[in-house]
Length: 106
Length: 106
DNA sequence: TATAAATGAAACCGAACGGTTGCAAATATA
DNA sequence: TATATTTGCAACCGTTCGGTTTCATTTATA
Image 1 (cartoon, rainbow over the protein chains, first blue to last red):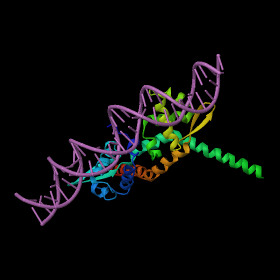
Image 2: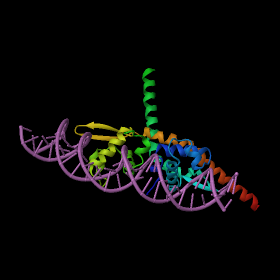
Image 3: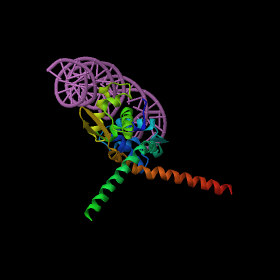
Image 4: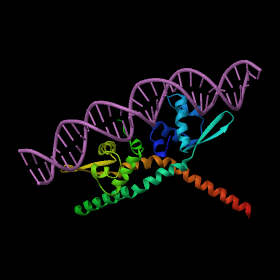
């Protein structure tokens, strides 16, 4: 167990599932049609996504529609925050170089 | 092999390494002091981070300083983009509910 | 009510993961 | 030059991962 969001999005199939669910809620069966692995394999992925609350089940009769809970993905966004400053600095650094180059030219 | 950024940040130790390198470049030895696993284990993590270009080696003598290449982390940020709209919509949706509630009250 | 459909859970399997220990290579230092 | 330091690599090991197949359960339908 011990599932977290970072581990959840590590798998490409799970990332694809999340993208699919971004447009509309879907049942495991409907999801499985988009992949060439078994329905049960998809079910296991969905289970992992549910465990870390990236996805929420909505039962209607015998069907279960899974819908995205994008808010949990903010956790990743927050983690990225501490690096965002750095890669923005890279831009300003590049900007500086370009400015220098320009000054040299003129 | 087949290493990508998402898999790289899935491991908590590797995420911690990235955070450490965000402040300053470090050697594997220096990095290892911050964890209670062997130097070789850290070396393996650093290798993975290097493979997907999240980190860049800078050799000086027999020491190798690894420095963060935060720009590669933009890849994660870009992937998050497609969900950012959704979790922002959640906010406006909540806003709508609150407005309705307010209107009912008055 | 008998049958079909949708789903989850369990058992199993090979591959990958994260860790260890041991060793070799390169560089600094006595 | 002999020795110590820094590092990476290889072999090995137990666990986890992603997949499969099989089966049980619940709900809809003929």
